[in-house]
Length: 285
Length: 285
Image (cartoon, rainbow over all chains, first blue to last red; front, side):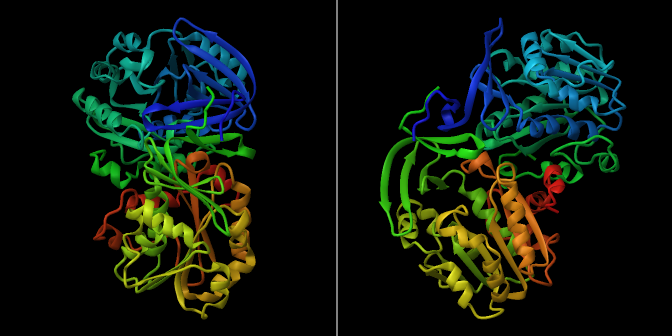
């Protein structure tokens, strides 16, 4: 069965697969100095943002990604107050971060302001917390921002970026991780989206190695479903600077959290830490 | 980007999505008395079997489904000796079942012999155990087979069927579950593929209700990734007849198992039991 142009399709070339969403209409398209952004209304996934031909966020399934990029790291840290989001221009991660009442400051540093302006228009539910007094929305180069950050000034760094090609490439390097080390407090945690365990195992291994070479002590990959991303199965990788173990978390705080989530809870936190057998064999332990 | 006929595409109509695999060539096609079967060689997923336009099994990702349809139930049961597989004609589930050395008899009852003959040709690795002295490959109506089974003669029933339309429809009914109850020993467990938690939550709720109405005591849905199935996120639902709790399992036996798996292990077993928040809210607890 052939798919025509009433579908948006992302092809995952080397893995010979493609995922498509049926469209109602194109709502917007622009080329910014950094990337090509399209916004669609879909038949069954709500609104859709596409960057450089790749799914970024859909109304229907973004809760999986945004919750898993945020809550495991924030509930693993003993007391996160200062959170830096690199990328994350759609503001969904920022919204999840600010659900934590003890967070005092959250910087979202995305190089492309257009992503945020379009998200405000087409994904207003993700931008609920943009006006929060604790939020700082900056449109700058995140790599440079981390380089210039004060030593030991940040509790959590969340790297919520596009794939490691184009503008996000520098976010997967040892040099960047060294700068993160420098910016993090001793109990600090870095968490980064780390692609599909089925499609991108070699990338995951390289990322983890670069984090280790940069001085991170423990490294823990988390797994979760994300239907609109390649293979529908996604991961995030946490790394700690010194003192915060990654295999435990503030479980009571999760069980007593006063905010709502749609995927994440204490059992899901533990579940996400489980390593599939082939990932163990690949050294992702 | 349009996809032409060098791709196989399954469209998930009501969910407005589609998953496609790039093809090298069509290897076989036939219409049996029961269904339309196609076999392809793909660019990156190995061989592919399609039934009535739906992905059944690919070489690359079937390990996820087959392991999760088998090992959680068999390691939950205290001592499974007699295992019935309804459907499962590709023989991948049978192979996983027979990895358990204490299993004495495994019946695979698939209505369509062609599925097994094609699997022997194109997925020989799934058919490794077809010659096992403990295996019985039957090509009959599984619903009728269970109706006529001796009372309390089976330890585990695995329903490894196609979607609940066409020949598999009767496998999702209270009447069928009553027959399963009758055929199971008191410590028996039923496990059934139960579709996508994201796309088919209402079906999951109906299945679980029908199982409960048929007299099953505890019902537990398990979650796992399955890239080539709709949404890439899949589930199985276990139900116990009387005495076997579904929240524990023979963890030491899993940790000391002498056979290899690629996804399943003790941590993954526990992880699969975790209920996402929206599934809890839907009553899947």
